[in-house]
Length: 263
Length: 263
Image 1: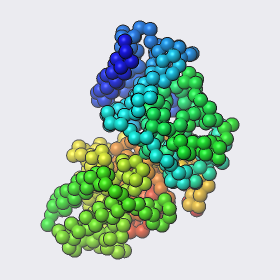
Image 2: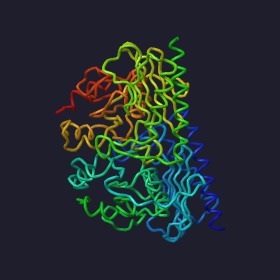
Image 3: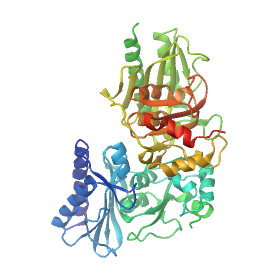
Image 4: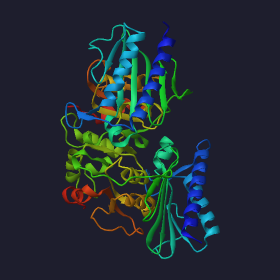
């Protein structure tokens, strides 16, 4: 078993899962909510996660899978090989828009990032990276990020964080909205993370993400020089829920120091 | 000269202009700013507007063209045939992302909407409508909008309007952000308008748009039952700058009455 085999195998599963998701759009989709009325899940999210788990366990019985929908293993540390999967990141977009969602997958080996994948299913855009080997979009190298400037930056952020809320002082966020060139909000952490990798956004933040939302994208983005931390500027554990902040290296520290005050 | 000829001619110009824009992405793009540092224009916006004007005037010398970049006619009323054009709607996206921008074109005849086009240049998605004849996306009919509910709505809105600003009471906007399912922000009024037409968004608003931002999209969206007004609920003149509000019919009045208080 070489790491090249794992990468090719993962890529093949993702392409196949993407086809299944696109085919599912013509059939019935069952929607239910999880922790709150806007935390949605569909039968497709669940079926796709089961598909991955079955195929991974067939080929690599010792590997563990941490998946959003909970059909995988209960993972509390990153020993061995762990696949961190979100079968559909941006479920709300999947339901409402039938676009702007992604399969997100990160493969970690003994705690270290090894392979990252984000697949924009409808555009058939596959972002991927092997740690230390650069990042690719549909096989073409993604160039290293150029320097960014705050006053010209496009920042991905939900409007919820610049209004009074229980997680972050919104006064700082208001100032950020005013100081940057534009705010965008796409509703998929995985896609917004690879948008930072491709320079379409210069930063993206969220107050509460799970490892599977960002496990794939962060490996890709770090290959081109983006900086990934939580909103306190600390390393992510990739096991626990946390805040999330990714930005072009030239504005990462500046945004945290000047605008972010968590509650 | 039949109206069918005008529609086919307009469609042909848009497809050709889209090819020119895509080809331009490999060359040098010159960027300058207009009314403020974030109101951007490029040589491509200008070249594409000139291309349209030249071709329209050759074929239809009596028609007038109202274009964003000012190379067309000075249009103060909609007598005769008026082409209302934004060669690149979402210029900031064009520059930063090389995607998520559109050609927007509305053709008005004696003050009445006749044809609307919005072309997502990078996805090659052409939304179009002839007044009274339904709306189409790449030749496939766009179905009439289904009923929407505020608590399940996705609303397109810039974060600027839910923070203190000089155009709208932000308290109402904060409540709107809390009451709907999600807020999205894409940075192209033309695209966000056709997203409402396709049900990907349930509403979209902006505090300050020009006729060319929305002239094409509104005709398309109205064909499937979306309601288009300014934020006071009044008819748009299509000649002057104004606020803009488009929504699924079932939530249009509700949002204006409950959340919108202009300054």
